[in-house]
Length: 229
Image (cartoon, rainbow, N blue to C red):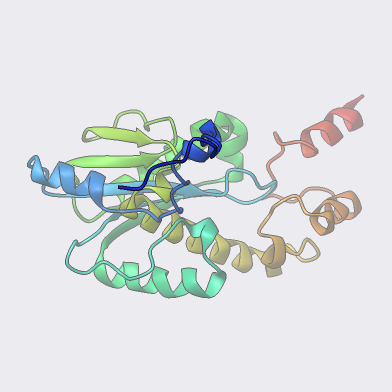
């Protein structure tokens, strides 16, 4: 047995702490526990597009097949566009998927939280199968769910089903914004997807808002209030 000599310094509290665990990706543990408890289908739900100044918020619901899960599933924010596009196609080919959106008008009417929950409920209704339980990214569950659910903070980094939903929602929304770009020329939606980049803010200053801008968001709301005074 190795002994510490009397003149060796005692290890500090910092030294005695366990080394930090390397970050790991999402897993199927929550889903497996629910399936073992008797659930036939477990869906993950996530959204994309809470923060932009323009465009819809898009939500997706995904029921993964445990025997056919695509390799490389992860939080969409940790994937490059090419990886998201590949996984989007593989998820659609191997899983049960539903996705839906809430428009900029609905965001202005219900606020972004309410519109996000509305899009999530619509995505769940768009699934071809009825899940027995849903795992929802974030702190909130959509109201009037047709099955029990669990809110999972940072769920896209913890649950494979939620990670898959984050990929579907992100790719679907990006495609919507790219399709909107020619209809609203001059804003550059295909480059910034509606986020408040310098290019986008300059276009709003130059052209004013268009029909897919969220007029309840700053700086659009502040500009409208200033114009009304």
